[in-house]
Image (cartoon, rainbow, N blue to C red; front, side, top):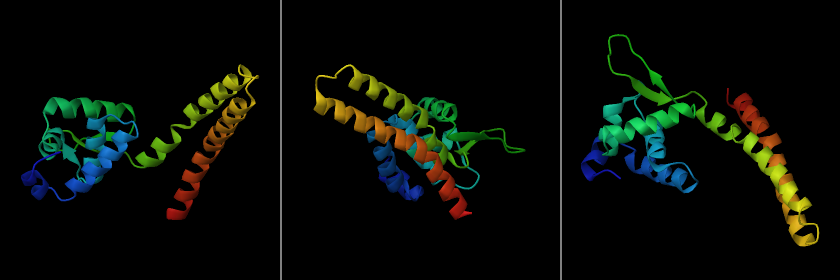
Length: 157
């Protein structure tokens, strides 16, 4: 998780590492979570891959794989600066809202599967009721998450 010297050179490292651990516990791959949380606390011009590797105490290859993953998920972006030959990376504007709402199709698909499970288990009423309740909750999330993000955007601007 980086040594004491790295932590002294980069404020916020401990909080970023703790946040990354939380994301990893929720299912995000560990290195992309660490890179993403480092970028939350990046300088306004972002970080180069070498700066990320130094901050995190990892190899350039580890950062490269994490960056590719995060770009493919549309959570971070490559920044090109005139006169700077090295690419820099930073969060995509509204990465969090996009990350939250991008799960909506998954919730809807899971709800459909929960209904199928209930349909195939008709002789177990408790299990059927549980599957239907999960399906209803997932449909609720599918509907509400985009609305919540829109409400937040409207109230924060």
